[in-house]
Length: 65
Image (cartoon, rainbow, N blue to C red):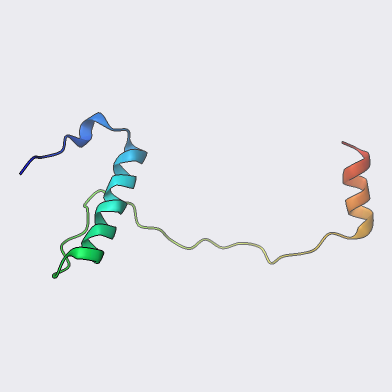
């Protein structure tokens, strides 16, 4: 089987390829294989609760642009 030279790709492309490979494994492989070693795990991040703008704040943004 042919081997891929991932060193020619930038880091973000290597991660994208790793994600696609994991997708194909989940779709077609009978036994799940080990995940890519260099894959960066995603972690949830905290965000502030949504606060809608008041009508006055909207008009201020429109006027001062």
